Every structure is written in C-alpha cells, then in structure tokens.
Image (cartoon, rainbow over all chains, first blue to last red; front, top):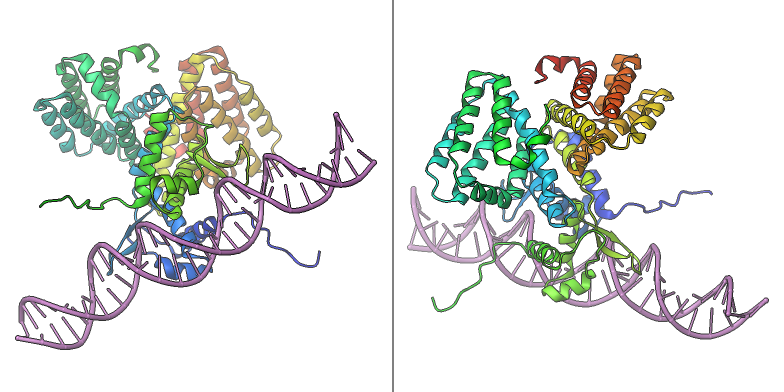
Length: 234
Length: 234
DNA sequence: CGTTTGCTATGGTCTGACCATACTGTGGTC
DNA sequence: GACCACAGTATGGTCAGACCATAGCAAACG
C-alpha cells in the first residue's frame, strides 16, 4: 500500500462532536461561553450544516449546550451545564421501555438519600429549603401537592450534601417516580408520620449528627416503602 | 378571537420525540422492537426527514435506539436499552466543562460501591466474574492493565447487586475516571494490598455477609482514596 | 432625544438529491 | 438440487440550498 485511504468509520456528526469536545478541552471553555454559529462551524470543519446540527442536538440532549435563536450576545449555542434534564429523560425513557424496573430506581433513591443525609449533617449546610418544604407539605391540600413539596424536601437534602451530581440524580429519580410517589401517599392516607420523619431529619442535619440523620432517613424510607424494609442494608 | 392560532412553542423534532415516546408506551414496545424507517415516520407525522433524524439522534444519545444501515430485519432504528454510554458521555462532558469536580464523581462511586457490596452479599450471586477479574489483575503488567481489570471487578460487583441502573452508573463512573484511577495506582505503587482487599470483598460476598462486605469495601476505598477516609459515613 | 423601521445574524425547518451499505431475489452454472 | 454471481432495493448518512421566525441592532426619522 502506497497511500492511506482514510476509511470512514465514524459518522460525520461524531467527528463534529469530537472536534467540539476537543475544542472545549483545548480552549478551556466553560459554562457561559459561546460556540461558533452552525454555518461557520460547518464551514470550518468542512461538513454540512445538517451534521453540525445533529451534533448540536446530541450536546443539547446531554445538557451541555443550549441553543437560542435570534441575534445578540445571548443567541447561538451557549455552553451550559444542566445534567438534570438529561438524566430525567434517560430514566423516564428506560422506565418506559420496561428496561428498568421501578424497584431499581427506588433502590437508587434509598441509597442516595441515606448517603446525602449523612453528608449533609456533616457539612452543616443551609437548611432553609428543607424547612420551607416541610411548611409547604403542612399546607398541602392534595396528595399531588404534598408530593411536590416532598420532592422539594428530598432534593434540597440531596443538594445540601454538596454533591451536584447526586443532587441532579436525585431530582431525576424523583421526577421519574412522581407517579409512584403519589400512589404511595394515597395508599398511606395519613401523612403526619411522614412529617414527623421530615422534622426528625431536619433536626439531625441542623444538629450535625450524621448517625442520627442516617437513622432518621432510614426510618422514613421504611415507612414510605414498607415492602423494602427487610432489604435495607446497614 | 374567533379561531385558535396554534402557537408553536416546541420544536418539530421535540414533537417527533413525544410521538415516538407515546408510541413506545401505547404499543408496549420494548428493546428489540423496530421503529418505522425515517422516511415513513416523517410522512406519518407530517414533518421532514431532518426533524425525524434529529429526534433519532436524541434517542440514540439517550441509549434508547440504535440505527443500522442497510436492509433486512436488523436494519433501521431498533429499540435498545443501553444507558451506559449515555451516562458515560454525560459525565465525561460535564467533567470536561469543569461543571463537575472529580471529588463529586468519586463520592458517587464510593456510595454505590458500598451499597452494591452489601446488596451482592445478600443476594448470593454468581461470583465468577469477580474471581476472573482478580486473576486478571494478578497477571497485569502495567498500571493501565491493572486498572482495566480493577474496573471489571468493581463493575462486576455492581452488576452482582442486581440493579442494572446502578451497574450502568458504576461503569460510567469508572469510564469517566479512568485517568484518575491509573494515577492512583501509579502513586500507590504496590498493588498487593488492593488485591488483598479484593479477595476479602469476594470472600464476604461468597459467604453472604453484607456487614463484612461493607466493611471490606470501605477498607478498600480508604486505601485507594486515603484523603477521603475521614469523610466516609457509617 | 426618542421612536420607528428596516437590516441582519442566528437557529429551525423543509425539499430533494445522492452515496454507502447490506439484505433479497433472481438467474445461471455445476 | 445446490451453489454462486449479480442486479435490485430499502435503509440510514450526508450534502446543498432554500425559506421562515426570531431578536438584537442601527440608521433614519420625528
């Protein structure tokens, strides 16, 4: 062989993706920076605008860019960092495909929740969001409304752990499981026990007692998912 | 107003996405089923093929469909369930954007690992993959090769927990952190201690002792990430 | 100085074409 | 009949070019 016939193994838009990712790393781009316009990017890379657009769609799906039409500093493809919606879509679709069972998602939730509570109690974070969510649940007039504030409470707990990845994961799990959560509340009927648990968790976090926080969360989840109690590790 | 001018708020490909997702739910499609060809789908939905293709790209990014060119039963867009690569891409890109810190990813890994070990010990799974990975590490001739089998070990442990979501998450975390893992092994130098830990974990899982499994994993991770030891909860 | 109006850059969509791939069926050959 | 070569065809992948909607921007105008 005298020459190298460049065998095309990757699709064009994958090349574009790799180029953009490389550029992010090389130029040290971060959230808030702008990417070149689609047409310009297409010309630079020697591909059609369609391929650039498909790459953009992928990046948008992954929560890495956000496209705005129009003109001006805020228009065009801007780098963002929003993994939440990507994770939510991922979980929702795979749940819909019956490729994941609710049990697996709930398990993940239990795990994150217990970890986050302990970590939050260790780091002594701001607990305003937690208290506010409890107040909201007190005033809830329907299971849906209760679950809404309950989700806010548990997401706030995850965020209080200081780990954005797990907080995003928590929010996605809750979003994917909203239906099951409402059913669980309806089945339970009385929510006063859940609220007692929430206050106990908040107290433990405020007191900076990781052990008590873990126990409080475990008790809470055992109440919410009685069938899973025997499986709770630790 | 006499008529309703349908305001277009969603982009066309998002409509297509919603339609496909609805069809998945309505027709009970699962992994292995085929979607209509792009051209036919475009005609059915009254949109251009470009929009269908962008929707396909999103679904492919989320690990929900896999497109094969050509003709025959295996060609076209087939529903799959491969959240691994989607999660890996997600984590890698957000790490590249400095939107996630390695610490956050490592924390998630610690959490999953401890949980998976306890769960695996409870369910008494097949441990052949774990033993094989340990053998592979024994024969490794470079840090990279060691890390490769180490990743296999820890992913096998996550899979042994029986939770596919967390197993996928674990694999993605390892893939995103491959570089750091190699550095850690190089820094550590001697891997015999790690191997002792691995054998202790395997023994605990085989004996069906969740408490010991958790302790063994905790000890292992404390050795691998000494700086994180004081933060390990429980 | 403020307002209006037209301009322009941007993403969003559509159309139609062509290519590469891989199965399918047909026909010939042994 | 079994096997193989070859044309046919359905599919995704890519490209080019056009047009639309949006939103900032700037010049003209009062």
